[in-house]
Image (cartoon, rainbow, N blue to C red; front, side, top):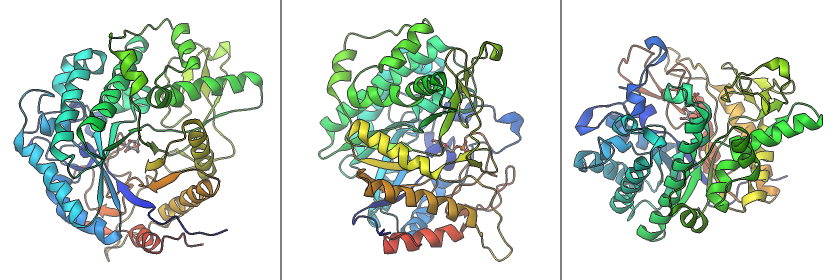
Length: 463
Ligand code: BG6
C-alpha cells in the first residue's frame, strides 16, 4: 500500500478565537458567553488572555507557514465585529481579521473561517440566546457583514462549530443546563441560522464555498443484543445525523423526530423555514473527530437520569433511549477520552456514503500534559503516534473511495481547553504559560511540529 497523499491535499491546522486570542476587551470587543462563563471555581485558566494570539498572530502565522500548512482554520469572534451582537460595526475588530487574512495570504495559506465557535455575544444571550428567533436574525446580519468584508479573499467558510456538542455538553461548554424543550428549539434556530449562512455565502461571495462543522463520531452498540443496536441507532441520530440530515438533506431525521415526539418536544417553525431548509445546501462537510462512542439500552434500574453529554462518553444517559458504555476494546488518553483510529475510517466512510460531499477534517488531535525541557524542547511522541495512527486511517479511507480533501488537526498552537484549562495541550507550537501565570507567552516548536512539517513537505506518511 502506498503512503502518499493525493496532490493538493489540504494539510492544515485549526484554532478558535476565544481559546487563543485573549484581548477579551481590547479594541472595542464586547463580552461573549465564554468570557462570562464561570471556570471551575477559577482553578483553571480563563479566556481573558488565553495565549494572546490577538497580539501574536503574525508570529503564530509565520511559524505555521514554516511548518508548511496550506489551510488555517480559525474563527471570528462575533463580539469583535458587533460587540453587542448587532448594531454598529466595530471597525477595529473588522480590521483585525482583515490583517489576519492578509497575513495568511502572504504565505499562500488559505483561510477556512468558522463564523461562530461557542462564543455567542453575551448581549444576545441576555435576550434568550439561540432559544429566540431574533438571534437567528442577528447571526444572519453578522454573517452577511463578514462575507462582504472578507469574501474577496476568503473563499472557504464553516458555519457554527459543533452545534451538536454545544447542546449535548451544555453544562461544560455553556456553563448551564438547557431543558430538553428549549434545547431542541435552539437546535432548530442554529440549523436555520446555518441555512441562511449557506444561502448568503453563495449569493455574496463569488466562488464562495461553505460547510457545516459538526463533531461526528460513530456510535457503536455495546453488544449484538437487538436493543443495544436500537440504542445506538437513536444516539447516532440524536448526536450525528439529526444535524447533518438537516444541513445536507434539508429535513428532520425520522429517528430524531420519534425521539422528539417521545419527549413531548414541539418545534416552532417560522413561515420561511421549510423553503430555506429545502433549498440551501453545503459544498463540503467539515468534520471534527476525536473518538467513537459506545452505548447500550438502559434498564429500568438505571432510573431516570437525563444527562446526554458525551464528551467523552460514559456519562451519556437518557432513560428509554441509550446509556454510555465503556468500550473494552479501546484505550484511553490521560484525560479519559477513548482513542479509536479505526473508528475514524469507519466514520469517514459512513459519512461519505450518506452525503456524497467532499470532507475536510477540521479537528482531530490529542490533549496531553506536555513538558517544556530546560533546553526548550517538547518531546511529544505520544501526540505524533496519535496523529500518525489517525492520518493512516485517513489514507485508508481515501483508498476506499472517500473524497477526503484535507486534514486540519486540533490545534495549530496550544490553547485553553474548553473545560480543562491550558494544562491540556493540543498544539504543534507550545505556548509557555501556566493556568495562572501568563509569563512571557513564548512560543516553542514541539517535536510534532517537525514531524508534521516533514509529512507536509513529502506528502507521505512515514512508515
Ligand atoms: C471540540 C471543540 O469539541 O473539542 C474545541 O470544537 C475543543 O473547541 C476540542 O477544544 C477539545 O475539547 P477540550 O474540552 O479538550 O478543549
